[in-house]
Image 1 (cartoon, rainbow, N blue to C red):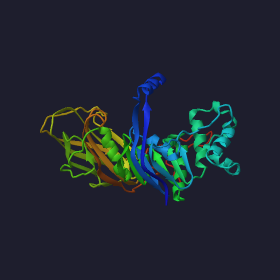
Image 2: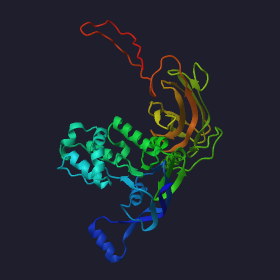
Image 3: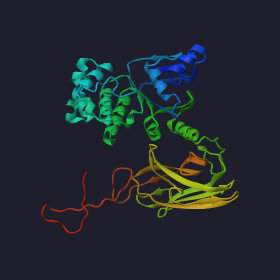
Image 4: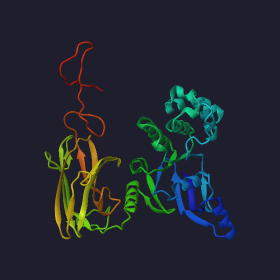
Length: 409
C-alpha cells in the first residue's frame, strides 16, 4: 500500500542578503531565486524505509517539509494516505519555563495524540526517554540532548502510519540511539513506513530498503541503498567515473591516474579468505601508475555485513610517504590482525592524494574484497575482540595475580 506519493515537486526560495535587499529586488522586479526541488517524484509504501542522502543544500530538508505539508510546492502534488508525523525539529512548541512533563503533554497533542492516549502512554514515554526525575524540572534546565530525547520519545509513541525523520537518529547516547532504532524497526515490521534523511551512510545502508540521492534539488540516483551510497561517494569525490580496469570491479570511480592491477586478502594461517578471530590477514595490492604522483596514498576500509565501517586506515595516516612516476608498478602488503567477531565483511580500497579520497581520487573500489571470520576457540559477542583481562578477589582477601573465569550465558 502506498502511504505517501510525491509527483513532480518543484520548489524555489527567494535569495536576499536582508530586508533592504529584498525590498530593492521587489521594486526592481529582479528577485533572485534558488531552486530547492526540481521535478522530484517518489513513493513510500507500508513496511519500508526510504533513505534520502545528499550534500548540504541539496534539498533534503525541503523535501521532508513539503512531504509533511509544512511547506507547499510551487507545482506538483503530494498524496498522503494515513497520518504522517514529521521529526524535523525535535521539541517544536516546547516552552522553557514549563516542566518536561508539561511539555510532554503539549508536544503529544501537537503530534495528534488525544489526552486519553497521552494518559495511557505517559509512563512508556518516560521510560523510553530515560530522563528520570528530571522530567519534573523546568525545560530551561535541560541540556539540548535532554530536550531532543524528550521530543523523540514523544514522537516514537505517537503511532502514525509514517515517520519523516531528518537527522534525528543522532539524538542522545548510544543506548538511547539503539532503543530508537529498535523501535523504528519494529514500527516498519508492523506495516509503518519511514523516510530517513541522514548523512550517516552506514545507517542508510543498514536501515533502508531503498534510497535516493538528491543533487541540486533533483534525484540523481535511486535504488538499492548500497548503490546509491556509492553514487554519493563518487559525487563527493567530484571526479568522473573510470572504465573498470583489469581488477574487474564495476563499483569503482576515480580519475584512473593510478589504479589497482590485482588485489588479494587471505589469512596467514588459513591461506584463504576464511579466517579465525585474531588471525593476521595479509592484504596484497598491486598498483599501476599511469601518471607521476609525488604524494600517493593507498588505503583500505573494512565494513561489516550491514555496511557499518569497522576499521579503515591509509598510508598517509600511518606516516608512509609514497611517490610514483608514470609507468611505475608497486606491490604493497599490509598485515592486520583481524580481531573481529564471527561474520562476513567487505573491504573497500582507495588510491588518492592527501588524507582522504575527497581531494584527488585516482580510484575507489567498493566491495573490492570479501572475507569471512569463522568460529574458533574462545567466543565473544560483538564485532571486535578487545582482549580484556579479569582479576578476581574476595573482599578483604586479595588473590595474587589473575585467573580466567568462565562466564555462562
